[in-house]
Image (cartoon, rainbow, N blue to C red):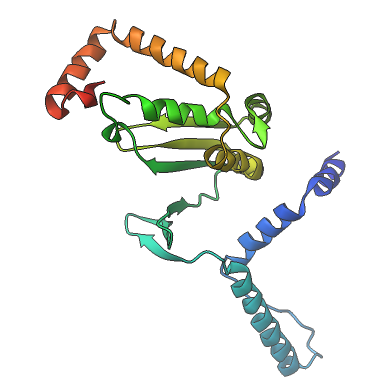
Length: 232
């Protein structure tokens, strides 16, 4: 049974997954060792090993080359984390955990409550929640079905200084999940029916919050500290 399952997984393996696996393997530190029979010429074998090592290191450098220019910075507080700063201003914070089969990706965009005023208050909440209603390559229903089948999620958020999307799922499904995540940001469709539903949900949430005494006390404190806009 295990052999059949193994062969079936090989059949489903795509070229993209193979390339990703190779990049992962080639990005690691390599250690070379060789066992040879006593009758073999050790000096010739060592020369062959050196030639192989040279070719392998060349392949590693070619694989790690990127068309995007960026600088890498180490994080003092976490030796396993890296910060990549691209020339176009995008910053990518990455931390690899080999013990976990899952991943979490968050995309932050500048904006939020501090960018709003009395006229457009609530705009970024509506914008972020409308991003996940479909994109040019898939409808909301298609995205929902694909994510549910993979036990994955893509959820919006909007705060005081940033808004964006969070994706969570198994690493083996990352190509599909990240594809929907990026497409939702780059080419959202904003279906009118679903956007109107999101507006109605926001109105109901605000109505319910107005009836919550503890939340009202919290808003009053925020209002005293930061002003009227930040308490909304």
